[in-house]
Each structure stands twice: as C-alpha cells, then as structure tokens.
Amino acid sequence: MKVLVIGGGAREHALCRSLSLDPQVTALHCAPGNAGIAEVAELHPVDALDGAAVARLATELAAGLVIVGPEAPLVAGVADAVRDAGIPCFGPSREAAELEGSKAFAKDVMAAANVPTARSYVCTTPEQIDDALDAFGPPYVVKDDGLAAGKGVVVTPDLAAARAHALACGRVVIEEFLDGPEVSLFAITDGETVVPLQPAQDFKRALDGDEGPNTGGMGAYSPLPWADPKLVDEVMDSVLQPTVDELRRRGTPFSGLLYAGLAITGRGVRVIEFNARFGDPETQVVLARLRTPLAGVLLAAAQGDLAALPPLNWRDDAAVTVVVASHNYPDTPRTGDPIEGLADVAAQDAPDAYVLHAGTRLDGDTVVSAGGRVLSVTATGTDLTRARERAYAALGRIRLAGSQHRTDIARAAAEAARD
Ligand code: AMP
Ligand code: GLY
Image 1: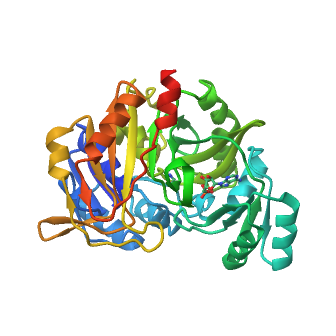
Image 2: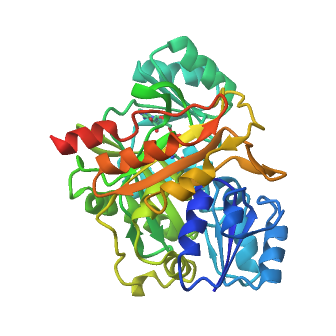
C-alpha cells in the first residue's frame, strides 16, 4: 500500500516512523514533512491546507491511504477533498472536525450526548463575560472558541488577566475549573465502531513543576501506572462511544482519531477538550507501544471496516517522550540554530531511544531549528524509570543553542510506580 501523510510535526514523524516499519507499506510519502521525516518518506512541497493540491498529489502518487495529521487541514476540509477524489482518507470531515475547531460546538455535542464535562457559558459580549467569570469564581478558565494551536486557553486566579483574555477572543467559552490529573485517551473510529488506544499523559506547561505558560505539550508518557484499570472502559462508555454516536445521528459521522482530553476529578471523569487528530506529544509514546502494524488499522477506519479488525496488540514496555523547544518558546521562538548530536543518538541509543523531528529543516547538509517545538526524544523501557533514563540520556547528546526542555517528564509517575 502506498501511503501519503499530510503534516510536518513530531506527530507526523511518529506516524511515518511506524508506517515505515509496517511491511504492508510499500511506499511512504509526506507533505510537507520535515528534516527527520525525509529519512523515512519522500517529501513533497505541497501546502497541507490546500485540499485540491493534496488530492491531486494523492492521485498522482496512486496513494491507497492518505492520513491527515494536524487539525488545521482537517478543519479546512482537506480530508473531504481527498475522499471526493475517491481515495481512502484517515481523518474527519470538515464538519466533524468542528469538534476540535469550535469549543462551543464540542460543548453542544457533549450536552446532547450526555457526556460529562465542565459546566460552561459561551460568551460574546463584555457583560456575558463578566457574568460568567462571576458565576464560576477563581481559578478562571477562559477558552478562545476557535483553533489556537494549544495557546487559546488561559487558566488563572487573576480576574483581570482572565477578563483581558476573554475580551481579546471575540467568542469565548468560560467554564468551571476541573481539579485532578489529566489523561489523554485516543480512539480510532470509522464513525460507528470505536477502538480505544492506550492512555497517556502529557505536560502542557513550559517549565518543571507545571510552572510557566501553556504550550502545545512538553513531554508525555504511557502507560499510566496510577490510573484505574477500568478507566478506558469507563471513558469508552461515558465519552467516546456516545460522542461518535451523536455525530453520526447528526448526519456528520466522525471518522479518524478522536482525542479525549480528560480530567480525573473527585466527582469522576470530565472531558476538558476534544481534538480531531492524534495529539502531540502523546502520539510519540502511544505509537511506541503499539505492536499492531499501523497502516491496516488506519485503512480499516478510513474504509468503515473497524468492526472486523482484530484487537490491537500492545507492548508491555513503557514509553517516555521529552520535547526540546527553541529559545523563547512559546512566545516568539528563535529559529535557524543548528542541531548537533542527532547522529550520536542514532548510533548509541537506537532502537530504544530515537529522535522525532517537529520544527526542523535542512540548511544545506545541516539540520536547523525551524519552529517552537523542535524535536522530541522518545524512549521505551521495561518501566517508566528505565524509559525516562534512556530518553534523558539520549537528549543529553543533542545540542541546540538556547534550547529548553523539562527535566521532570514522567518523574512523579515513575517514582510512584517504584514505591
Ligand atoms: P485545552 O486546549 O482545552 O486542552 O486546554 C489546555 C489546558 O488548559 C488543559 O490541558 C488543562 O491543563 C487546562 N484546562 C482547560 N480546561 C480546564 C478546566 N476546565 N479546568 C482546569 N484546567 C483546564
Ligand atoms: N498534546 C496536546 C495536543 O496535541 O493538543
């Protein structure tokens, strides 16, 4: 099978890595890709947001499966353009991707499907904003209604800061603060059958100890030794299946990857957000643990055949990924700095630890930084302690001027599992 992956971040590198190890995949293409993906796939300089251009490329390549990675092309209808060209596509339609594209739409779907989530108000005027902030009290949770690359959410005890963010957003969702550990649970669905993956936890704040601003994610691990073994079944029944059923009922079935961002509160599991695609950096650790070849699973989802798929096969190993971000991320990151040590990781740490590129590009023969999150180092091991030792050992071989990373990814979970 010839496969075309759309996107160019660490999530797409993780997808391409898994696909490159899948014997069913005879040719692997990616648009636009990055310097790391170029090692496993042929790159094409096609705009990921241009549905017509992506469909044309897929047709030219005679692709048997197209996978749309990031949310922006999904919300722009790129998966629809590919399907209209008669090519199986993994990724929801423009209408179904509104589950991520509009937080107000997601809240409406959850209310209709009786899915547990934070109480919320959708506000468009300063009066509504003040009333909603007043109704919930601190800490305030203020969310831009539209896509904001992980930066549209402000959680703060400071009323003035909450109000300023809300006023800057236009349409805004203000909601109840959810207290408790967060879990990301991904499910693959064809619009009817839902197949959950293994849960992961990501680290959204920039600095150790969950300090600093929200980011797109600074690291992740899986499995979650502290979580209730019944968690996945419970989320399937209370969140994932009802949501998929509700979207089908509305005539806009969701096929692709449904990402539930959850808070495990004292009163039970609550949905923090839905995404319409694989999460980054959780994908790096979830796919590191998936033994079932990936292409067949995604093709079954694209073709509505998931009910016939055998159960997924998982490694017992733990996986940890640590993101290396540029100087000044998540503000205005500095780019263009050379990245050294990549060959050392490939020589000394593979296959237990490896680098997945996010914002990188080739400058001549040199790999240089080209975005906020530059790369992530992913490692597996018999337990979280071993996996994180390997991830940080490999990370120590990489040199990028001014770069930053968290030193506490998976630390608390690894320590708790040892006690
Ligand atoms: P989102 O983009 O909706 O995932 O929000 C980004 C981050 O903000 C989440 O991962 C949480 O850490 C935090 N957050 C969002 N909504 C809430 C909430 N209702 N209560 C507490 N924290 C939240
Ligand atoms: N890990 C957060 C996200 O992908 O949105």
